[in-house]
Image 1: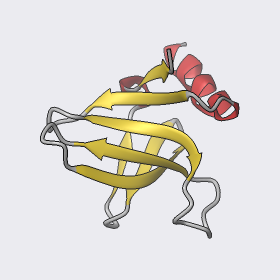
Image 2 (image 1 turned 90 degrees about the vertical axis):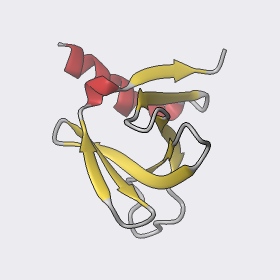
Image 3 (image 1 turned 90 degrees about the horizontal axis):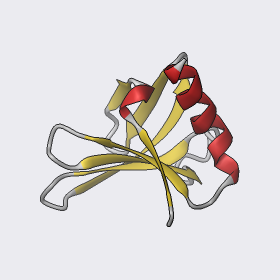
Image 4 (image 1 turned 30 degrees about the vertical axis):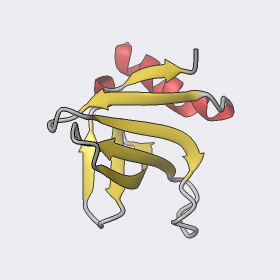
Length: 94
């Protein structure tokens, strides 16, 4: 049930501009899924922008989407990863 709720939030959240999803990463930073279109991939309009921040402040950008019950990320350096959607927490601008 929780996975269904997270899925609905990920898919339905695109209409709201001040909404994103966060997860802690192994480097002590976070992965942030944004709702804006991934503009550097014009041939892949279904992707959304994201970034992963290291605790030192280093940032890696990429694109993401939700397919087959998983969050799929393609980083700008060409590496791709799959994440469990339950790792992400919905955030909104206060």
